[in-house]
Image (cartoon, rainbow, N blue to C red):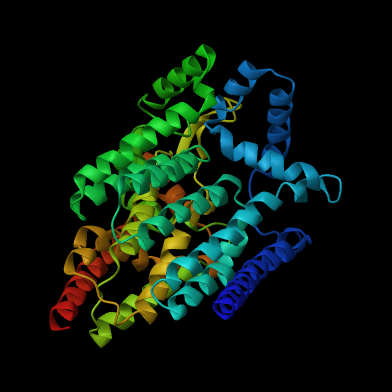
Length: 472
C-alpha cells in the first residue's frame, strides 16, 4: 500500500513539474517580449495601457475609500464590467514598486494568457498527448497570440472561456451540478468583458440547434444570466441601473453615434454610415480580415487552420471532430461576426471627435478565436482516429470556421506587405460620394472578389469534407 502511495505521489509531482514548465515557457516568452521593452522598441501595436493603469488604480481607490456608488458607475460609461478591471488592479498593485507602471499593468494579462496555454494543453491531453502539446505550442509561439497576450480584458476573458470548455470537454454527461459550475465560469467571463455575453448567446443557440440539447442550453443561459445579475455590483445601486439603461438606449439608436451598438454592424453597418457599397468589405472584415493593422504580427494559428483544411480535403481524410472543440471554434468566430461594435462611428472619446468617421474596431478583437483555433488545428492534425458521430461536424458549425480560415492567406499577405485594409474602405467611401473616383470602383470590385472567394472556398471545402467523411 505504501509503495502504491509513493508511486502516486511521484506521478503527481512529475505531472505538476510538467505543468509548471508548460506555464513557465509562455510566461517567460511573453514577459521577455513585453516587460523587457522589446515589443515597444520595435513598435508592436498594443492598446489602452494608460487607460487601464490609471482607471484600475482609481477604481481600487474608490472601493477602498468606501465610495461604492461612484465605483459602481465609474466604468459603465466605458462599457467595461467590474471584475476584469478589479483583477488588473489587484495584480498590478504589488508590481508598481518594482517596475515601470506601464509595464506593471501588463503583468495580469500576461499571466492569464499563459494560464490559457496550460488549459489548452490539459484539454487537448484528454484526447492525446500530441493534441495537448500541439495546442499548447500553437498558443505559446503564435506571433499574433504573443503580441496580443497583453490585451487586458480579452486575455482574462479567454481564460474563463477556456476554463468553461475544459469542464465541458472533460465531462461525458452534464449533470445539474456541472451546469451550475460552467454557468458560474461563463458569468465571470462576461463580468470580465461583455464580448463574452455575445459568445454565450451564440453558444446556447448552437448548443440547442446543433447538439440538440435545448433544455441544457436554456439552463446554461438562465443560470449564467442570474449569476451575472447578482454578481455585477454595478447594478446594485439605482445610479448604476439608470446608467446601464441610458447606455442601452444610446446603443440602440440608428446610425453610428457610439462605438457599441445593438444593431449588428455586419448587417446594418454599411447602411448606417451611408456606404452600401461597403457590404463586401464589412463581410470580409468581420469574418476574418479585421485584424489587419499596422505593426501587427501574422496569426499563425489562423494560417495553420487554412493549411490543415486544405490538406484534409486533398487527402480525403475524415474530419469528424469532437463536438465541443468545433462548437468553441464556431462560437468564437460568430462572436466576432455578430460583435455589437461599430467599425466606424461618428463620435469618439466621449464626443471629443464628432462628425467624421472614426475607427472603433481593432486587430486584437480576434484574439477570442485564438485558443479554440489552436486546439482545433491540433485536433485535426493529431487525432485522426478519435472520430465522433456525424452531428459533431454539422455544416452549421463548420461553415463559419471554414469561411474564417479562407481569409488566412490574404491576411498574412496584407500584414507582411500592405497592412492597410482600412485604405480599401477609404477608396470605396470616396467612390460612394464621388462616382468619378474610379479607383474606388476597383477597390469595390476587389472586395467583391474577396467575398466571393470566401463563399466559394467554404462551399467547396464543405462538399469535399462531406465526401471525405462519407468515404471514411
